[in-house]
Length: 148
Image (cartoon, rainbow, N blue to C red; front, side):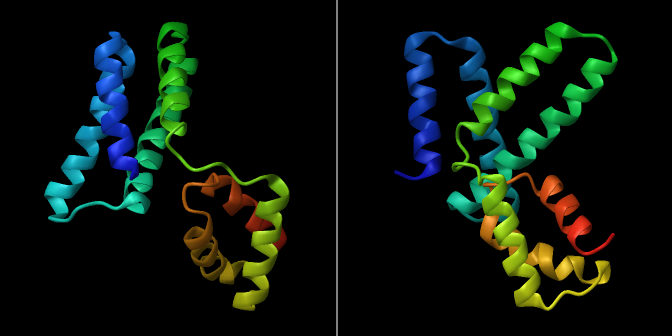
């Protein structure tokens, strides 16, 4: 079952069980996927759906920071719940040791020697860890290893 099919099945289950908040978020996911498909005139595969989900998670995490700064615990709780639900559709996350090993392999493969080569390393890692690691955290680890 593809990721899109799983999301559709979850939407049907949420409708049947009357989970309004969950249903609303799943409809937002479906809408974002369809919007991208219409804009680019393609049918998204699982990897592209993961990119859409990661973008939605990033938006919610940014909003979360703003709501915490604005002292809005009600909205903080809502955004946190949405992030958890969205992350449920992503593949299992890599451990810190796996990320470190991936970074070391990418540095060796690309021959990176300084911070100027960070783009090469990120390109390799992004292809291998898409949806399975927080790329911002990975970027800061790469920067530290390359002496940035």
